[in-house]
Amino acid sequence: MYVCICNGVTERDIRQAAQAGCTGMPELTMRTGCGATCGSCVSMACAILDESRLDEVRAENGAAGGNVVTFPLVRSAA
Image: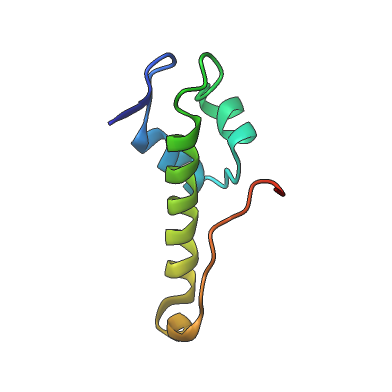
């Protein structure tokens, strides 16, 4: 699915960036161009990026992480 139409960035591109260590929207924009033009994709891109990072944490914890509660990444203070 295309997330950023302006720059042709797909959900897969965002997940690959997360797997490569991308942790925030500024870095995602630098890597892919996502959000650099009109910005209407930023909320969806952040959600996908957070979900991808959370999946990585769950995979790292494996079975031993059954009692660990993970929280979404916080991008900025209120």
